[in-house]
Amino acid sequence: MRRRAVLLLVLAAGCASPPRTAKSSGPAPAPPPTMAEELRRDLFAFADDSMLGRSAETPNGARAARFIAAKLKAAGIAPAGDSGGYLQRVPLSRTFVRSARFTVTQPATHATLPIGSHLIPVPSLGEGLPLPVLEAAGDLVFAGYGLSAPGFGRNDLAGLSLADKVVVFVDDAPPGLDSAHRSALRDPRSLGDRLGAIMERHPAAVIVLFTGRQAGELPALAAGLSDSSLRLQPTLEGPRELPMVIFGTARDAGPLLPAGWPRNDRPRVLDGRSFAAKVDLVQDIVPAYNVVAVIPGSDSALSHTYVAFGAHLDHIGILPPEHGDSIANGADDDGSGSMSLIEIAKRLQHEPRAKRSMLFVWHTGEELGLFGSEWFTSHPTVVLDSIVAQLNADMIGRNDPDSLYLIGPRSAPNGQSTVLGAIVDSVNSASPRPFLINRDWDAPSHPEQLYYRSDHYNYAKHGVPIVFFTTGLHADYHKVTDSADKIDYDKLARVAALIMHIGTAVANSPTRPLPPSLLR
Image (cartoon, rainbow, N blue to C red; front, side):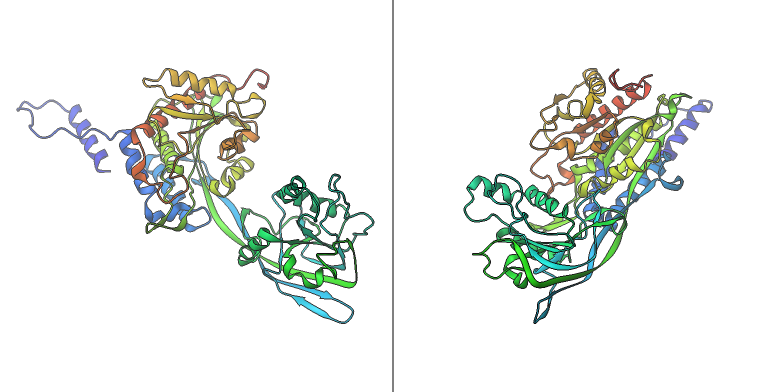
């Protein structure tokens, strides 16, 4: 505010008649800060310890969103979130088991099994799948190792009637298998295949009993009282069509296993035994927010289309202490991208308007599973098809001063980002100091899988041309040592300027940056 007032006084003095007295000998006004200086100031605040790591599921994620919104408001940039504001609510939820009761009935006994390391209900099997039922009962059937696929020398499901039964199997390999088959059964996908084959027979419930290392991991899962992972709301709603799924350990299974186990692993009906379960869930709603802003375009027709700039505002929060520090500041990941978007928006706000509008989205929940970008692309605050390109900035402030990784032109499906990639190359080549572009990671089959690991991916799934800009991984990635003092601010400013000029080039183009085969 003070600097702006000084500039106004200087301008006013320049418009007045020149004085007849001698020139003032006072100091000249200070030049405005450079982009690098602005980035340094904002990033030291955004990645400060007081932000406590900006984890999306905590109040610190919301604080980070409000920090960005306040910067945009001060710069006079128009909001484009929910209800005319900057924030777009992203509904996350965490599901806990409030209570569960498991009972095994035998001819002479009626036993209650404890929830915890013995048995753990699984409230959800994954995004997009129907939900398991919360109450089930039926006669017990032991299905051995749950094997039915060819190649393992046995079919544990053959001859068993599983409909409306409670099916128990052990997630291990039977004796006598060679090392290749044993390794295949320990692949997590094998468990999914066996569960799927059993569920096709319509049991009331499936109990999976683990051994070895997997059994040792169950207490940690039980400590959260079952599935406490975050996901986009709702999780308690939706069809509950799948059989109940319960995890347990073979060591503690007791009456769920046949006499003679493990020496006798023959699949069979456990005569006279039945199982009943009832699970009560509670859902904790976690408020999280994207930040959305827009700079309107100048062309009457093209201003209804958008070039989207993206970064993620969240990080990973608090970690185990390392040399007395436990706060993962996330200066590069992705404070560098988040603060760069603010600077790009501020500069575009004061330049002649491009023909298309400029959309800025700071996504939350990227570190948790790209939740913010998934929510925005499925609940956009502008028409999704009106977004002609998305430029994603994530970790853009470290490593060699002249190197820059691009991901997307080769990785995105159907060649949808090849034209956008050519625009990037053209603008970069025309820069006073072009970056050396590294394309090693621009392949969906690359071991690091970076194409799938940032927010551009959710836009690409919807057919939007994307480019992901990053200066690469480093030793401080996801550690408490990713701090603001390690950023190369001159490089960060150069990357931000390049992204800004690329966005302007796309915004002034009369056609979408798509191959002719995809234009419509």
